Length: 227
Image (tube, rainbow, N blue to C red; front, side):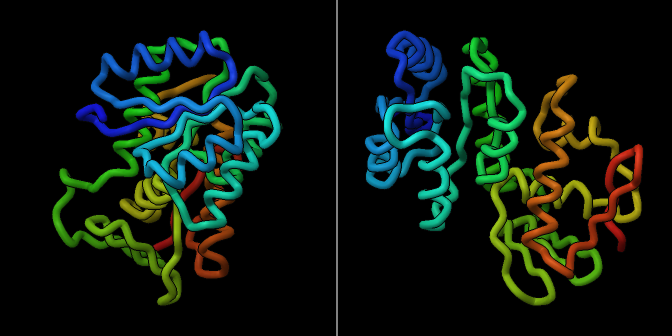
């Protein structure tokens, strides 16, 4: 295993697997490859990787089914989807199922590495944050040190990306965040079509927080959290 942890790559195109393995290995990651969804799911369960790079279109069990199965088992290992289709329905469904980010083929291997590192930073401990720092807005409370969320006193499970999005909004209640600002702060990059990603994740966070959600849409601008 590499010094940066083991990444599971589930991809049915050998040349793409070889390219991803080459670049991730250079960055200090260990890499395991599987070529179909069922084998990928089995490997994710057995190997406990730090992240999964997962093609959507796979033989037999596709990538979306793999994510469904993992999340149903309460496995929140970060998932980076890759897809040959630049279709919004694929990307949005993947994010709704609990994927943390996505790339459209053909992609730059360097961008994949950068996106993967960003996902892992969001999933990892908040070492740079003051210990036991807590943010609150209405009936929602988040512990930044332990990355725990309570809504009306009940624990809520969020993905790494959903947690950081909620933290960004609660960090300054009342401040209106544009989608572009949130995309840059939470995902660490900006893209012309990327703002839809923000909308999907906000919808997911709201659904999980239920009636306790303090997130409010500011039409034509973005989002804010009511204090």
